Length: 309
Image (cartoon, rainbow, N blue to C red; front, side):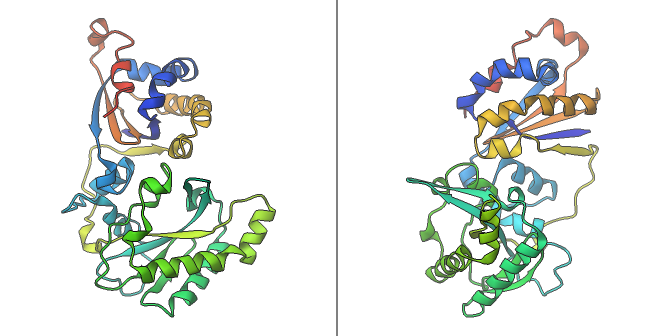
C-alpha cells in the first residue's frame, strides 16, 4: 500500500531545524526514515503551475502536458461528472477563496479551509453567474464546491492552481497582467460585489474569513484525462500536515507531528511505501533489507531531509 503524506517535507530553510523535533515528537516517523531507502524527485513548480501532489494526481490519470504546464489538467481532473451541460473543449473551473492583503503582499486561502456551507457557495456562484451575463464569459454549472466557466474558444492563458498560489504570497506566482483586461475587470467587479454581501457580513460577525475572491484555473480537455491505470498499490492519503505546510506555519506543523506519527503507526505494514510531498519535491520511501541496518547510520536520512534543489 502507498501511504501519501501531504506536507511531510518542510521547506529546506526549516528542514534542518525540524530534525530534532522530528526525533522527539514523531519517533515512529523517524524510525521509517532510518529503515527505508529514499528516492527524491525535484520539480520546477513555476513551470508546472501546480504543487507536486497535484502533479502526482495528474500522472495517475496519464495526463501529459506538451509544454510542461501541468496545471491545465486540473480542471478536467476535478470537473464533477454531474455537470450535465455540454462541456467546452478546454475546461476552466472557478473556486471560491479568501485573499488576505498585507502591506507588501497578499495571501490566498483555499475553499477547503474556509468552512463554506453549501447555501453560501451556491448564493455566491449565483451572483457570479448573473454578473458574467454581461461579459464574454458565462458560468455553465456549479455546485457547493466548484463552478464550470466558459471563457471562449480562444482563451489560453497559463493560470496556476489555487493551491500553488496558497504556498506563498500570491505575488510570487501571479501577475494580473497575464489575464485579458475584460476578464480581470469582471473578477474585480465580482470581488467588489462580494465585499459587503450579507453572507460575508455574517461570516465576519462569526469570526470567519470572508469569501472575497474567486480563482479560475484549467485549460485542458476532458479527453486529456485517461482512465486510471491498474496499479499494484492501493493508497491512503494523510493531510494532517497539509494546510500548515501550505501556509508555512511551522509552529502548527511541528505541533501536528505527533498526530501524523500516530496515524502512520496505526497504518504500518512491512509492504508499505511512504510517499512524502513537499514544496518542490516528492520523496518515496521503500523498505530496506533487514541486514541493511548494519551498514547504515541511523542519522543518514538527515543527508537528504534538509537538501535544497
